[in-house]
Length: 122
Image 1 (tube, rainbow, N blue to C red):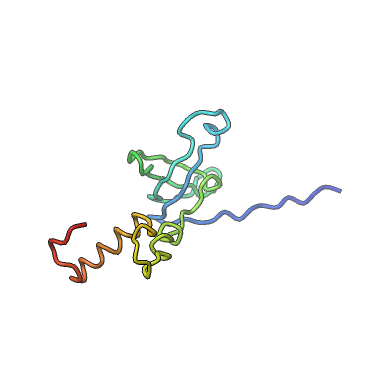
Image 2: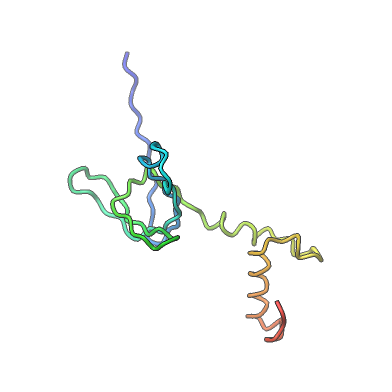
């Protein structure tokens, strides 16, 4: 009896989403530069296949990539990018326990709230 084929549901991405993309051909051939972080610029439906494809901008060099298959994309959620700030040990007296990104974020917001004098050293 033949196995029923299941089709994986592809996630949808919206303009501005940060994603991780892997060029499968470059990956399987062992070529460098097969994986990069990008931002979704637009989505569109291919006229022949009807498949939704994406145009991306590679963040490291602002290079554009057109017609990307979403099967090789993964969303980089904001919660993951902000995890170090959200979990910063603010009650710790030693800022060394915090990541540099968390320290920078706290300092920036303290300045914006005028909690620190404008000429306070970093």
